[in-house]
Length: 107
Image 1 (cartoon, rainbow, N blue to C red):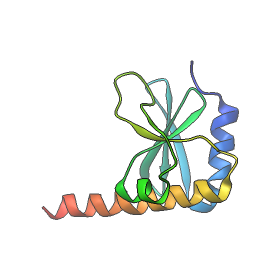
Image 2: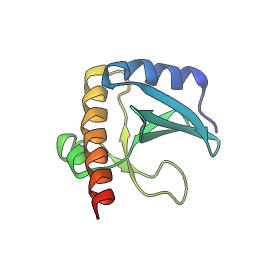
Image 3: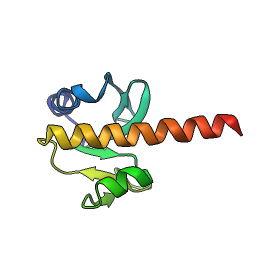
């Protein structure tokens, strides 16, 4: 089942304080970017955030599940109504992803 535009719009509105949030259709679902960093997918109207050690440490209560069959586990952000918590999760995750990207380019 594909995600609805209403859910995608709601999530991106909730994340507005995290940075510039953009999205695009990917494989029948939706990929999310914050300041041009790919950080999450929306599948079946659920938000799955890329796991990072920092994100997992800051939000240990979040379950890990694959967003679709055959995928690696992502953090499942179950409470998309918690704007403050979502914003913090995205900020922590994107900071970690940017740091990983810089380390990879230096090697």
